[in-house]
Image (cartoon, rainbow, N blue to C red; front, side, top):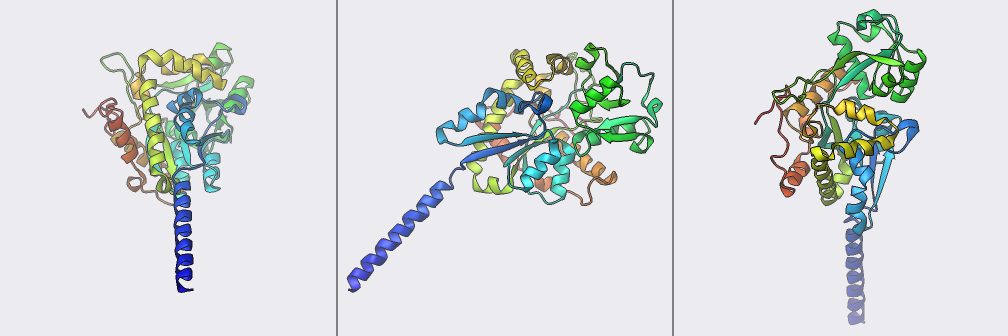
Length: 364
């Protein structure tokens, strides 16, 4: 009887070990990887442009990488932009996110737990656009008028910075909240007096014009550099729970992104990606002119360098100053650069992008 009992207990123990092994194996990879993208194409189209993220999605690179594992890639494109991505993450609907500075900071300040793993790009021009019939010569000429801004997104901080540069505040205007596409329609109909947006397709139709254009300073090579005025770098983050559970999956995903960033940075791929981005419904001319004169390496730079850190810290300070967040946010313990550093080393790209100092100047 004792031998039978021992045999039974041994069998149960082995069965339990096997079950634990199966559970551990099942947790070795997720069934799906869910990415929250804080924008969508024209009319909510699930395609975007203007970034490495767009290139990866439109070329199916993540799907290709994880197909052999049976891992499904799920893309969520949110017309509600950053606030919608925050809501999705708080409801455990996404694992990774692509954010501008303000919603990134707002989410962190309200307790969302994620880690910054690399930048999705930086630099580029900024424009303040008015209806074609506008008589305004400066922003001050629009005092008391109606401006459109996508509140809760990075554009809210961009407008605040632009107004400050011109000695103004939001109190000098009537500010309404519209997404980018609604604002462009309102410009066309003259229902608003100005907004921050790309002007090229609007100007080609004769319905709007640039009041202000900000580009980087030109270097000796004739190309634009970084001019840290009203824009901030983009950010890609991973939820802490996912990162702790699947660090090897995070590394593979980052490797795909950094390899794609290098492809996107090559001059021979300039026109190819502009044509890809036009699938979003935004005009090819907008991308071509917005990127004209810029080094692709500069715009697609994924580094978490001094420039990136300084800009995010500045955005935190501004969000506090403007009353957009109540709690301070620590940036230094928010960064997790090991995946980026590993990817750069594994792909032989350690010296491919040039780190910038806090003022946007090369440090090597």
